[in-house]
Image (cartoon, rainbow, N blue to C red):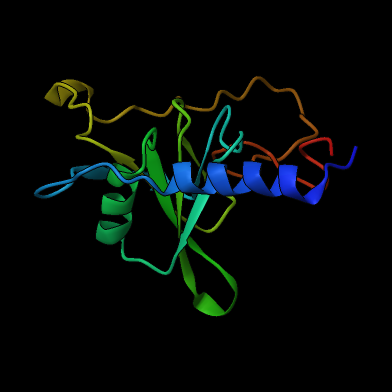
Length: 150
């Protein structure tokens, strides 16, 4: 339903002020590249997330994320005409969406694996003599029209 202008307006103003509170940040902000593609994963677009910060470098976007309460990751997405955009995210299970142009970053330091486990080996394809009616299009999740069911 509709709310009287004074009731709805007060609620929006209060929410905007709360979002603008910044956490203090001193020194460099640790971040690392999670992968190629914009940040996605369960809950990536819930409530107040993502928060668009406009044209920022990865370093400036990391600082903006560190100042935003609940921010876990950010990305620099390539928009129309090559313009890059910084977006902040608050979800936990961050994965890059390879089909969406950009670069996904996570705050903090990467998990370091022992040297012998650094690179994951790809499994070899086995020719089982059966003709399959599909084509491997690459790594990542398949997407197409209406992939979110909306």
